[in-house]
Length: 245
Image (cartoon, rainbow, N blue to C red; front, side, top):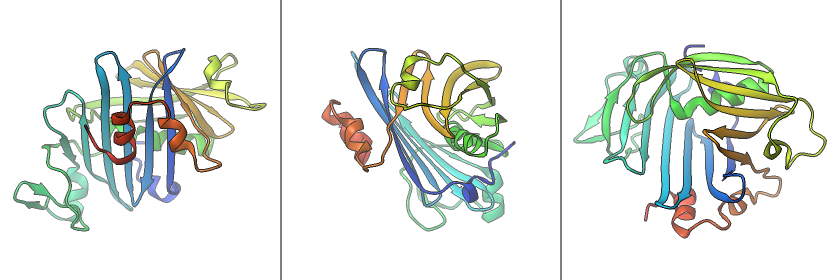
């Protein structure tokens, strides 16, 4: 796949919470929301030097592609706003009002350093939509051209799955009598950067450079409160409301 143009038709609205652990204790959480054709991702990781906070918003146009991606993380001087020339060519020139970009429904986006990226790409945090669709459809492989959310640099990205007979303990910790476990490895320019585990057509855990996250089930609609339990107030406010202290 070069761009996930069918994602909108195949992906119902959802909210997903994951908690991060370093093997012994909870060190953060991640929230993903897919609604109104926008994928929102917020990450809060707490460390000795303070929390790392990152937010990504990717806006899609039904039937076409993504059009805008806004990203800001701890350590960045200012947010980065990526725009996709393919979608703006279809809908008209990129609308600029002063220094503020407006979406097609006239809602303002936060200002940021604007970068134009190559057509046929997908911002990095959009990977979860690809992974979710692969798992739901029972497919095991996809490749596309991703762009780094901060720099806009193109990256050849591939997800491929194998059956994992001995997954890490945290993958199975919250499951009752799980079925076969699939491990989806993400490779960027040929180098593995992350792994995701899926059981019974559901992504249950992920791992990035030794830090893992576990998905919380939301049968009682309490996953958000469970995810932020024990985190610093600043991290919780960011995950819930996008507020940076």
